[in-house]
Image 1 (cartoon, rainbow, N blue to C red):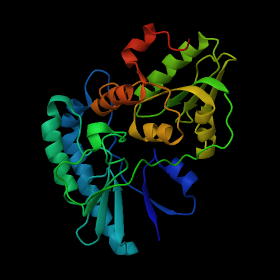
Image 2: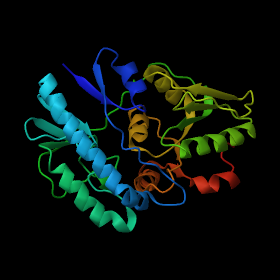
Image 3: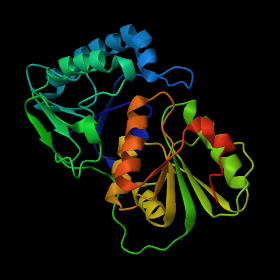
Image 4: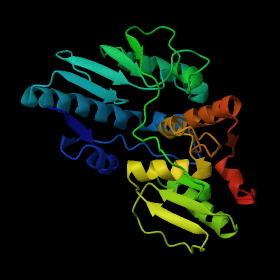
Amino acid sequence: MVILGVTKTTVLIFNEEFPTFKKIDIEPYNISYSQAFPLSIKLLFEAPRILGVIKKEQQQLAKIIKEHQIDVVISDNRFGLSNKNVECIYMTHQLNIEAGVFSFIANKIHHYFIKQFNSVWIPDYEDEENCLAGKLSANTSLKNVTYLGPLSRLQKVGETKVEYDYLCLLSGPEPLRTELEIILIVKANQSDKKICIVRGTNLEHKSFVNKNLTIVDLPSAKELSQFICNSKTIVCRSGYSTLMDLHHLQNTNCILIPTPGQHEQVYLANYWEQKFGAKVIDQKDLASFSLFN
C-alpha cells in the first residue's frame, strides 16, 4: 500500500495524478512570503511555530507507521518525517540553503535534520556541467546521497505548433502569486501578442481580459505539457519544480521572476540566466518594464 501525505495546497494535484491512492492530511508549514522581508528573516521569527509543526509530524508519522505497517517513508523536504524504526528517505534539490547572511546557520540546522534520515535523494544531475540547481544540489559532506536526475510529472509532446507568444505560469504562495497575476494581466491587456496565463488556483479573477489573452485554471499534466510545448516564451517563477518541467519539455526560453525575498529562487534565476540564457526580472521592476513586446 502507498499512502500520500497531503495538504490543502497539494491534494488537488495528488488527486489528479494518483486518484486511487490513500491520502492522509498532514499539517502544512504555511511559510508566508513578503516583499518587505527576506524569507530568512521571516523564518527566524516563525522558527518556534515551525519546530512545533515538525514535532507534530514526528508524532503523526509514528502513529501512521504503527496503524498501516509502513516499511519506507519518503519525505519531500519535510523535516519531521523521519522515524528510527523504518527506512526514511529525504528528498530535496537544496542540500545547501541560500539564506543570505543566515546561510551558515541555516545549513547547520538543515543538515542536522537531514542526518535523521537513512538516505537522501536529489532530483538533479550530479555532475557540475549538467546540473540544474548549481551549488544548491552539490554534495560536499553528507553520506548516502543519490542523484536521481531531474524529475517531472509532465509528458513530452509528440506534435507541437506555436499557439502563444507568451505562456505565464502562476504558482507559489499568496499574496505574492495574486500580486504577480494582477501585474501580468495588466501587461497582457496592453499587448497585441497572444498570451496564455495558467493560474495555480481556481479562485475567481476580477481583472478585465482582452481577446488576445487566455486564462486557464489548474490544467491537467497533459494539458500543461501541451501549453508549454506550444508557446514561444515561458514567463514564470524560478521555483525548482517549474525549472525541471521546462528542462524536461526542452523549452528553456524563459523569463524568470523570482519570488521576492526568496534567496533560493533568486540564485536559481541567476544561475539559469548564465547557464541557459534565461531572462531575469525582479517583480518590483515589472510595472515599468515592457514585458510582452
